Image (cartoon, rainbow, N blue to C red; front, side, top):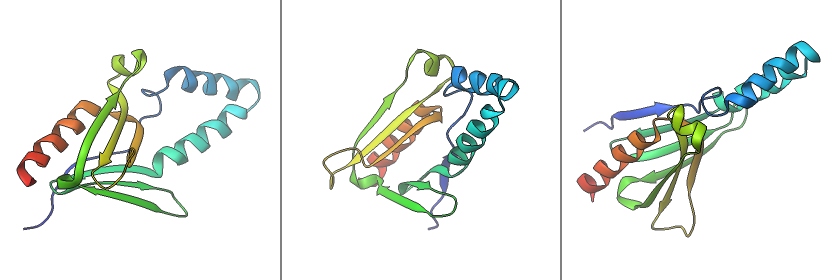
Length: 130
């Protein structure tokens, strides 16, 4: 049976850091520096993708060079979600996933939309596959 994608997203720019986003816009008018900040930030966001399938979680980073990290649902030991005040208001957060084979967090991504949904999807498939 083919693996199906259940969730795929890039981190959010504005919703994850609205104050930083607004300050960057202000800096465009002031010095043009804000445009450079937004461009670098946008490229970093564009190059980061979290994919949750019915079998695994995959984090892909990079535009020119690529780094991929995968954790099978059967190996997931812990899923952490953390959200600050603004993140809770804008429904984004940081998700951390650790596996049985590693001591620390193996996959961590900040600014993902609906982090609780990601955690629930992983939890559901951990039980089904485990």
